[in-house]
Structure formats: C-alpha cells, structure tokens
Length: 96
Image (cartoon, rainbow, N blue to C red; front, side):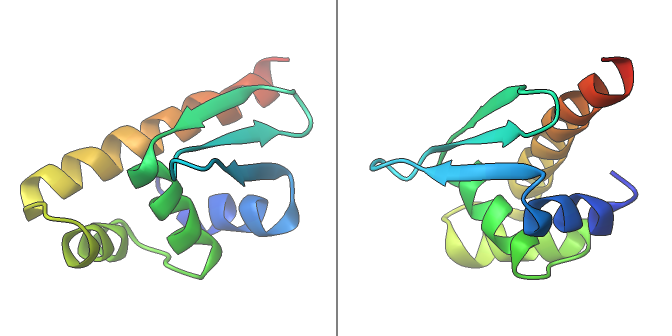
C-alpha cells in the first residue's frame, strides 16, 4: 500500500476501529461500511505499529523481525498480505 500514512490515519481517527481479543488476535471494523476483518496476533501487532507511527513497509518488516521469530523474507510476505487485506477492506468503501 503506497499510502500507509492514510491507513495509519484511519486507525488513529477511529474510522477503522480495532479490538484485541484475549488470545492476542483481534478484529478491525470499518465504521462507515461495517466491513469486518479478523486478524491474528501478527496482524494486531502491525495495527499497533501503524497506530504508533510506523509509516513504511520496511518499518513494519523490521518490527516483525525484531518482535517475532521470523526472517525478513517471511516478514515481508506477511506485511504484504496484511496490507492487501486492508486494501480489500477499504475498497468496500469506494464500491459501497
């Protein structure tokens, strides 16, 4: 996603509400479209990084590598998949 800043802004603004569950997974709710995205622990970790100001794919990858037992290639794939899912969630807004 080229505009990670916009995504982070949505998370900080409340337009994308998120809730962490007891097992460290969670859900994102797009407040305008009521679309829901379930996230595993890694996804919630990335949401937290975005809310805290991480603004680049490399920053998200570095955070995953530092926090989890994962190599850079796997972390980059996971970040890409996470951002693709968020794109799909946000596309519902433009098609709704």
